Length: 169
Image (cartoon, rainbow, N blue to C red; front, side, top):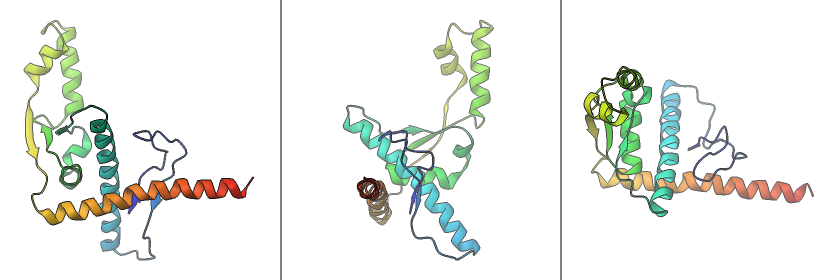
């Protein structure tokens, strides 16, 4: 299990003192173990995104679809894990070099080819592939269990911090 707060948590708890946690390390250095650690890291990032989406939705937003762009949008495992963990479809841009597309949108507006950024975006961009969450209930059950552990890693960290703060008084 991975809590990827190695540089603190910016959202949704906004705790700069939060630390990253890797739970379940062994001395195994096999490729299989490294692959499992890689998967756990991807999942930890996705559980963090789920936490943000849940927080936003609990505070009046209605997020039910995500748009992915940039380099990680090209990683099918990363995208599918996010869809499965967050439980919503993820739209990939038709143009896989979205940063370059953004620059060209700004250039087209600066060259007066469009009246504004919104018009240029509507004309120059479109949705590509949509990645849906798995419909297998076992996948949801698995991720719900891991998400519960993910959330507990931060709660345990707060408890440990409090214990040590009291010991140092």
